[in-house]
Image (cartoon, rainbow, N blue to C red; front, side, top):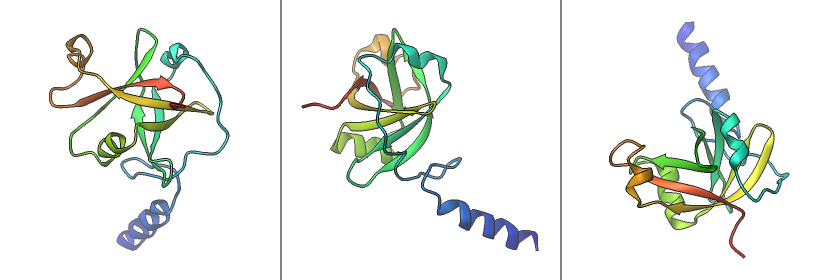
Length: 130
């Protein structure tokens, strides 16, 4: 009986549009707020990251802020990391607000040394390119 309940719960949760634990989700929502910087993001421990705008794929990540900029780090095998390489336009959800951002790969050791070795580090800059 327990196995059936676990399978049923996992089946229901996997159909959700938002990320759940280790399962990716779809769109994080429609209403987009505007900001010129992410300095306020340091008050958040977690954020939702949505990649591939035409077919949204979202994950929940820790919110890492240095000097007013948000950074995310992807293990090379992470699907969302490879999707950012294809299209750097992302959306992030901080609290209840959703923002557009552009992911820029960071090469400088002053930042990359703060993350695990072998990770690809991105700085999220407000808004999408014109």
